[in-house]
Length: 452
Image (spheres, rainbow, N blue to C red):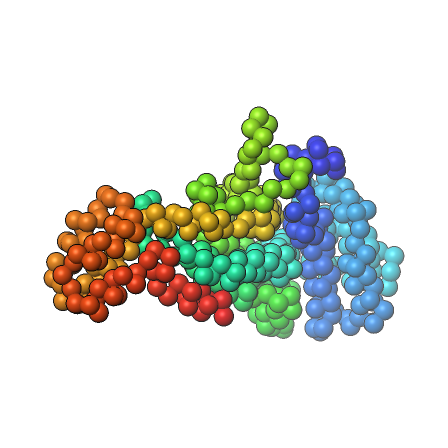
């Protein structure tokens, strides 16, 4: 069932090309490989204590080779053991035994999984997957999307457009500045993800190091645990039950969920700008927008992104609900949920990929934007009444309200009002200097500041 046409999930079928980078971290193969890695590294760590004899250089290389050459056949062998044991980590233990059985390391077989519980192995392995996927997949994808947004903001920093508040025409802004708003929001999230440190645990069956302490009380197991977990660039959590409290992992997912909600907001805005004709989409040779309406160029990349972001966030939300709760010292209901991390990240990656593609195909219709600005001179009434206030006009707001509320003003209408109002020449000059195309405040300066 490796044919994408027969895949149950679209992540492994329709979107397989986009999500392929994640399979090296969250596939069943990757989970098996990483748990074998943890167990073998544990043997190496024990060999540096007085409990286990030191390893020769060739023996260390041999253990490293099991990981480096971990194959589909190895994974299948583990699954074969699991079909008998119905226990995934015990199956990994038996697999490692088979690898060491006919080697100089045979005497170390009793030390495989010594004093551990399955969740020691699992939590470290999954934290490795989260750490490495964040560094190699999530952050680079975020970078690419951020770069495209930034370039768009820079290129169109000075393109004026009517803003809308409550869906109604409001004072002008620039297209680039509106993109810079999203850059600022995403920048905060990116910085937090960039420095994120994932936790894992090695604390035994209920978190008290019971077996390890009973078998070898002379070893400082607290220090051992801290050093071993830290060796994977993870944060050791020493105060646990049988399972790692997943609060730390959830905070990471919450950051991605926040980024996704920001991007849902962005996708909906872009959809509206396209719908209103502010943005034009490139016509790509051979593409079809509708099965019946040949003229259409639909904003499918932004619609697809919105849908995938929603699916991802539904899972991220469930993680916060489910993984913060465990019955007493442990129940198994979290295990199957944790196997879906790649799914949530996969839908996120599909969405981010679609946004990148969509952004490369849009550009402002500057003629449309200019025409709309010049058709609505009433939008500069905010500036006009503020100029009047500065000139001491106490009824400035009411005067402009009477002229503009619910009305569309032309340039002629506005200029006639400027000539008729009782103000000094300097104030009249300021009023006449206003126009929808130039009344953009510090939009360009704000954009420049964000981009820097």
